[in-house]
Length: 427
Image (tube, rainbow, N blue to C red):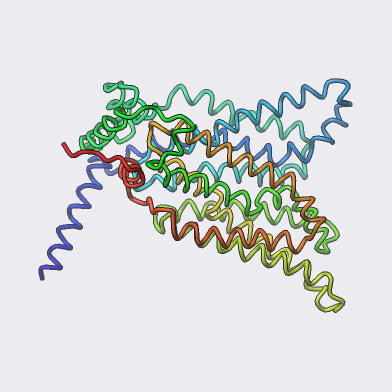
């Protein structure tokens, strides 16, 4: 009886707290968070479209325009440089902004929408590229950029950033807009304010300060996830998908790449829906295990290719296709978006700038290394390349199990205080 009564009291208390967070109107505030999130992630579509058409189509674009390195190809490269500059900023700022404006029970799913938009950009550009020319694809990419640029004038600033800057009135006003006019925000205001007072007693972290012991856990988790994400081979497989399928015995790589594009969006959507239900850690481990299996199957397909048995050779294309689709689907489920979600949650606000720069640099550097070396690795050993990737994905499962904290249903302040050595003194 005591247990039942205590459980009932706890349930009632949680229900009342949830009601306070959502306001008396039953959660009608959420449309502000939804619109703010959609504006923030609209630019991420351009990242996907750039992956979908920019690099593979560069030679065709230059030939179509009659460009050469001696003429005006620098305009094309300047455009790509500008896209890269903008994407580099958005890849970090967008998940951080979404994490700072959303309630703790919705934060994971909303932050992962950023990865969903990237997948939409990649998949839709692959599909549209089969029926329209590159000029139309480039013009389509302008639309979400304009949506984001104009929408930024109408969405609220991050309350936590306003609190850090000492703008108390604007801080409470922005939080009120995001939580609803009837919501009780006093507890959240006090928690953020107390945390900011602790943070402001610390100096703004520089790059070298990140290697202090008190920040070690956050930096290891943030950097480690980005390294493992990229060295699991995702960009090599994405950029050289056609070559992989042709090497495995397909007459053309187009069927495989279209199948990859078709898998990404539903699996990323599933990840968005499961993020705040299953938690980050279980989803990450399932995702990493799936990418490990996918790489292993592709490696096996290349091992079978050197065998003389005809019935084995007939299986090679199917095994390779299944392996790549398992890898793509598993990566889209968790490893694609969750490292960015966790990165946006674990760093204290006094080190978000420097830590975010470091983590983003590591991510893009890893992306470049894998993209550059992948073809050389395939020439060295196709099977060996994918077995290496499978091993790294297996290490990712252990890394997540041992070091990555569960952040579901915890406020940013709770997460950051638990991972760093400074503490918030009770008032």
